[in-house]
Image (cartoon, one colour):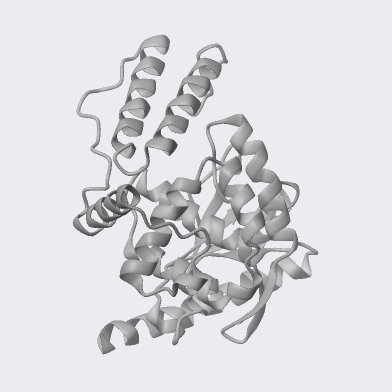
Length: 307
């Protein structure tokens, strides 16, 4: 453990140096970034080096996206660049001195247009009302606590439904709820979760945090303990620990024909919804609804050149 912490401390020095450069350059250009995930969450741990973070996620929003990307390229002229600066991407990525910097247009992508519009309003509130936080001697902004709690859970769930979630994300959420207990607006959080069909998923997380991570019951908004939910939450945690949460990759090649390819993708997403139903039947139903709607919209839309 000491060796891991020492290695993390050494990584943090480099990461914080790049973060300071990026943050200063953006703010000097009149851009208001918000630090997401990594460093902002590490600051909530008893010692920041107890929580590793390997990249820098800076939210700038859609209006500041292109100017912010230009500032990052000017600040790190020798950085490696992999992503195109396109408006359909969630973020623009470059690697400066071995450190990945992600400049975010949005925090999470949604298939369902209604979900996307609702979440955009939550995101706008959460970033506009950000908290000030000291990270490595740098005065930075992190998301508003209620939105940050929603985002951290949603980020973990997004991983869970695609590539597998990690215990670190559970500890992040637990410490965030503990640190900002008095600032979490429980009524707003409930409205947001209901609007995104995530209330059942949130309760699974709260059960796990209270029963297994040690979060106090009074600090777990919307905690619910019934036999059915407990069984599903235990299954979710067990599959996180054993790696069974990761969706199996399709063994067949996608068809080349346009309509056949889209039908193939749609079936893959519906199968994923069936897999998620063992944890949250309510959210799985929403996944299926958004898959059918998104599929129908894409079926009659023009092909995009990046597909």
